[in-house]
Image (cartoon, rainbow, N blue to C red; front, side, top):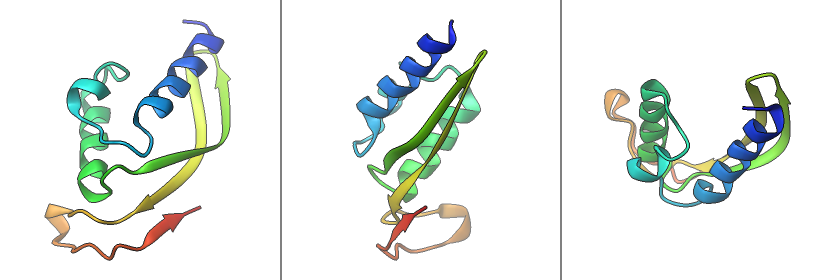
Length: 91
């Protein structure tokens, strides 16, 4: 894939899933990496429908880097026994 097509894939992913539920069948349309799929599922459980606000995007070779963050902790993190604080996180 070209830098431009890699960047476009990430932008399509954000448009499809940012601020929305992230079911495995939709995530798998954009992600082909089991550890990353598990990472997304973990954070979706802790931050349901978390929104990723794109502040900056850089594509170089086969890599795309993003600067973003916006979420409210509403779910659970099972291994840490943390309960939701329902406060927003932001950069």
